[in-house]
Length: 387
Image (cartoon, rainbow, N blue to C red):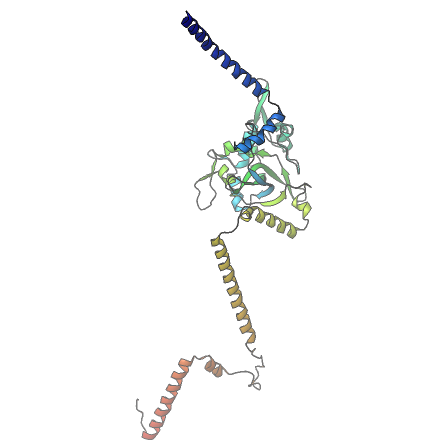
């Protein structure tokens, strides 16, 4: 009986152990959730002393992580009269499915595939508040159109191909963003928006420019990738797309403004044309050399620069020596050409003697000696003989 009692007591004790362990776990979890900020701060030094690594705070998944260390916004004016930009206006009329940039942009606008935004002088805001009314824009620039309705709603506009003023769009404004990416360690250029500029001749014969609207490049890009163009007059094979043209910076344009705190253009900052051109060239050099200025030159670059400097110095020294030697040469006096001034003017025969090379002078001297010897022999013998 006693052994039986001991076995029953041991079985009951073993049955109570899981319940006791679960209670301990529950108190531990509840105690962990109740840790205060002061308790956690007091516990941190003890963990560091033990050598436990501290955990860095994690960023939220929706937090943007910017890798742009430097950025500058530049406004450029693209003149289609320049050879590099002429591809934007080819062809002037639609032929065999080919369209120039303005015809493509206007068609996408009238078909409600993309949006355009008001041209605000000195302030570009690409929001719905400043989106243009397409019908109003067509009427403003005297472009005939008709409305295309679906279910009583305006689904788009129809513009005849002959009414598109493509030949009057002779330039573009583009908005560039120059940025330095610290991950890629290089400077890149992105075209953010494009604005066609309408040129109209005024009453006095002056050229009037009317910026029409801004179009975001990200809206145009899906269509630009499918439009192939050629950029070389010697090779008419369409090897590039309009998107390649802008991504690879194959255009040429002058800087007419950079984003600044006073929101002033280059014309306002530099009224003098020469000073304005010099400032634009300086800005262009800064943009192109920004990433190069961040890195120390390599040994090869230093040696190459030193060699170029030595060659330049040697060329300069040779030019100086040439100038000095030419300055030391006596100047020939310009005397009178009359018969009485024979001392100041050399005869033609004397000049020929001076200009004759030494080799030929020696030959002439030998010939004259032989001639004299021949004449003396003839006089003595009374007959001619050949030497």
